[in-house]
Length: 452
Image 1 (tube, rainbow, N blue to C red):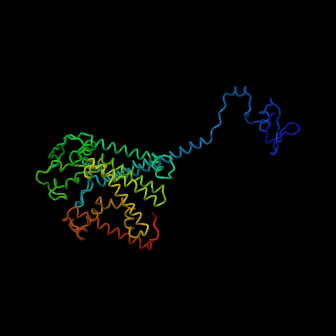
Image 2: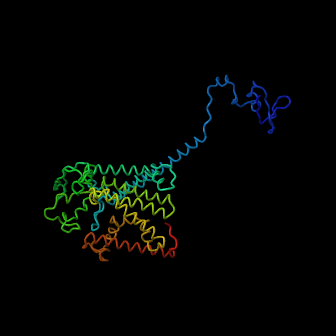
Image 3: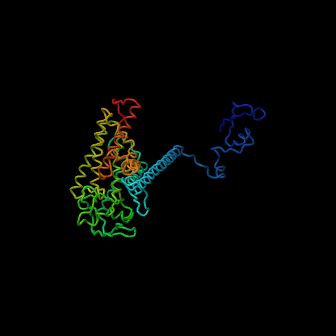
């Protein structure tokens, strides 16, 4: 017997009373026509099928659709939502990196001609493609993609679980460091030449640099410079490398100056300190910094944070010393080596730990530096990219030499180093003044609490 509860009920003559709502209909028997009973409610509706049909009826209609697992559908939906969010975050990271890249090419590609030159413009054939902002853009993009896509769902409750959650980050750092070392010490660097324009644009003097070596990290024959010359082109590299200020290349060392007698042929050769191969280790440095940032995110106790910072920092000391013992010395001005990246990371995080401890008491004495950190890119563009000096030199009285900088005692009679220090001093003074006005407008500063 099968019993079905319906919304409508038939009266004595077998007709359904469509006006009633709280009624039932009982159908008894094994071979009852259930569909005809349902048709009494709404004759115009299509035939309904019961889940208890006989095998013959089911076979005549074909195989029925199985019921879906709702929890699996929800899980799939969450996965799709997460991948959409990942794509949106990736888009933002790519756009931000692209902005930094374009800004870097504009500011450091040769468009501006120097702090004592009011002319501007750059030949596309000689534009510099790499630079500090470009390196930041590349390192940021790789680190952002790792943070978005290369992490698992491990719950962080200890240092070990933190390592497990971001294990793919460490794998990438190891892979990039290995590729860097193999290329730096394994590539063969042949002899090469470059040109220095003299007189007319069509005239140039050719210099030949003798190499023919493996694993040289000096200024002339390192693999990093060879890769940049092959991919970017020697005419697109930085034309005032730091080794041009050494005693071998300048009589005014440690500043730029005329060549001394019997100077090496590579003294005037272009070289980009922010080249392709050295950017690989910059990416590794950025990824290491990202791991230190994870400690801030996942651990709220300050003592645990300091301990988890000290452990890898001390490990980097040992690793850096071992690299130096085995012949991998600091070569900052030619390549960004592993032994250079490790002290940079170490110094940065030791300083961060000290600032963290110091700011527990009062943050009044660090507010200027805090403001500079919040506006680091703007300050770098204005000062380090010579935008502020060019703006100040653009206002003069009758002669370009009678500008604001000359008025305050920073004239073009001083060398570039003193000029740069003067600009930095003026900029810091202006920043301190802006901070003072901003603090005065907002009221006194509370030293009892600090948002660490």
